[in-house]
Image (tube, rainbow over all chains, first blue to last red):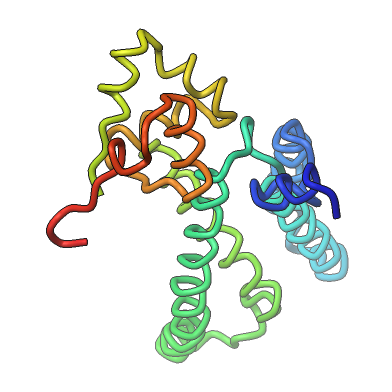
Length: 144
Length: 66
């Protein structure tokens, strides 16, 4: 690894997507959200397939946004990225543990079957981590 | 840790943008350092000191609680 590559690693702009991927990532998120709210829930098969597609589109979009480089990647932005990841881990883990319990409690109160409105736990966890990361990244960037 | 980057910048008649370009970081990073919101790495601190031709201790100084 030469000096230039080491400098890149130090700045944290290695293996990251270009900055414009932010805009590319927003497209699947918007399509996913639109699909989620406009689908025909009466048709169970079609509904389930479309829920899967829309949720995955949102996750892929968020992933593209998260993995993009900053406009000007430097050590401060890398520091912010690390801090946001740490917060996403702490807050995300807490939410992932707490929310299913609360939901189970709410479902038992409302006499609703859990399967009818819960998405897959793995997808739910990834979604929470992504959302918490993006919120914290944006929040820390505001302090720049 | 407090610093005198803004003083050094004024002495050398440089803007934050000028310094950021020379050092290779964003202008926001220089602003955060000056406002004590971000403590730079040793590499960055040394780069700033080298640019101003001053010992790093003259620019960055430990505070009581550090």
